[in-house]
Image (cartoon, rainbow over the protein chains, first blue to last red):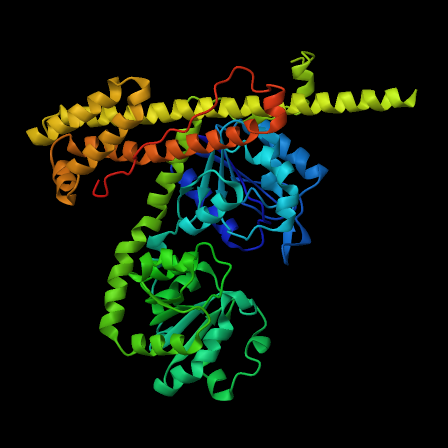
Length: 386
Length: 174
């Protein structure tokens, strides 16, 4: 199958959507499909051979944070050229409601279009204002995919209609087969995420640390992720600071080794999550998971059967659960077993097959993806010439 | 004099808007047709797989009869009773594959794994195709309910789109 995928966010900036697009593209290529990914990237950025750069991403304030987006005349014409030259049987766009490449592609194409909705942002004013403009573009999407039941619910509330739920994929084997490192093992708690982003919840975990250290003096907290370490530990007592190791930004291999080594993985996020891929990675690596009770996390953890939950932002509940888990190897072993069973549905084998079924369902019998002729008035007046 | 220029501009704008909306509706109807064809194909694929399994002697006679009857009804029923017949087939499939052991045993028989794979793929794709179809129906209905669309009969003679409602829950053990 010839598949065109559009990624709305800059290729060289790490992020959930980018990783998802990369893994999906590589999985499909391994299965023998022809895949081309259109993504914002400068022409001289080194990109894999399947990526077509669509120009520079510009940082713009959008929806309360700075997003790096690509739009404008030049990008639109690159989108059209990519569509013309690709001859795709199916077009898969990600995050079609961000004002970026995905929306441009949706606007410019006709034919079988599949769209994946990753985030579940509350309906913003800009979105309401732009709805009359966006609706005709969104109407062209033949199949919508939501990454979780939670994301599907918000999608249905915002735009009506329906979507199928296909979770984000994880290469389970990669995490399961990673080798643990002795220096990260033995009474360790792991945390992965941007450390200055309050929604990732590191402050809650730091608040819980004194209580955990009081009960388990040997405990160490390993923090992986980019950000300002000094700022993160501002106001944290010295004895707690000594028990924290900042690893900075880690590679995929290091992350897998970290998740394989720790006795407990804590996800204290306070909101803004629609999936929680890091939980799936931790589960794949067999790290017992303790996560805040967000809708998305609850779902990924099979309603609490494949990991423990604590009330969002409640540091003392976090501390109690963490101590209980650290003191109970049998419970951790039971969680590991539940995780191994549960995580299979997130493996690329399963997820990739589901995504392909969606492609086949919409592409069967349909014409290939083509450029939308929006000089349509010429058609309608019978003046179009081929 | 200048008033006529404004009137002409307004007429052109209204005409352009109507033509654009008609094009948009046309595309929505085409999307429904494609989604409906895909749904039909998936339903047919499912009933064929079920019927094949029922006549394969891989299943016990009671399950075979049950499944054959439901699959045959789903394939041959008149259009207006189709939703009920397809729901019955979903129920029959769930009854036959109520226990995980059933699928596990089928896989060990010669030719069984292929039959199970076919049926599994088909039962998973029906709900997908149905969601996509009903989603396109909803989008078209939203546009067709606009006053101007009804007033100017922009939808032409196309019938008002109907959702396809059925029980499509796949058997959990399959």
